[in-house]
Image 1 (tube, rainbow, N blue to C red):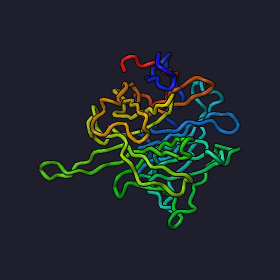
Image 2 (image 1 turned 90 degrees about the horizontal axis):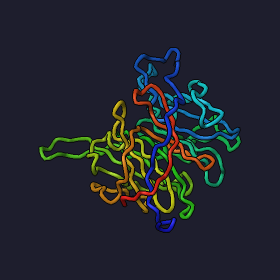
Image 3 (image 1 turned 90 degrees about the vertical axis):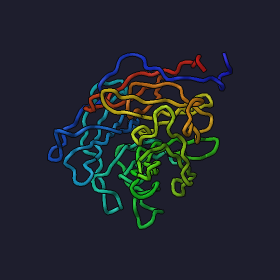
Image 4 (image 1 turned 120 degrees about the horizontal axis):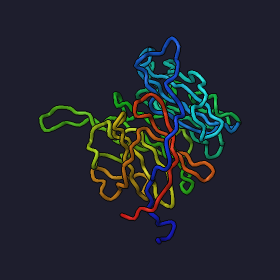
Length: 316
């Protein structure tokens, strides 16, 4: 066996899925077409588990999206308790009406506060909850132009979204991964929309680096839908990028591996591709030595969970 720091691993689903959250009752803004989609899972200060999902196709004005929450006592519990609507877009701080997308929460590296990164339809934004809370979040509008919640964007009409963040201790940097549209021109001169996974870094969550394209194309093709919901974990010296290609009944995501957190393959993924999983919009959580994966139901009517293990990748 190779030295532990050189082990190349692959994720493997183990056991059966269990239902965590369903399609919630949204009251007057509810719709028969509504769907729980991109979400975040984290442990609050009181030890309860929190799950907030973007619910789309509601009657919410504008882009129809808002955040709804559930709470579980244990990560393995089925059917967590519905907690109601948690956050709606606020145009007064520059957010697109109904444009809430993809919440993701981590603990701050120095403050230990809860940091929520989310999209407002075209920007990546930040909200914070005190380290002794983790349930109620307040938008961070300090140190931003005109007091808006936005931290950065790939530009107008790029739908910059699906942010997730890790902190790399060796560099003392936050790495924020996200996806966005890329506009190209084909041979006939027609403008087409592709997509990519990007990353920006920051020491203080205020100043952010220029963006780096970290994953694009390969066996999935270049369609914008093939670059959604990036999720990165760091194990034994390697970074693993999970990237969704398709939602719904034929949901599929691809996993890539690299020692460089800023390069998972651009146009050619033969050296970084690891495996595919039948999931969409996944989030991985390690708790008490066990890994769990949360993902959308194939019917887009809720969120499910399963155990996951890391196996040695003998094909590499």
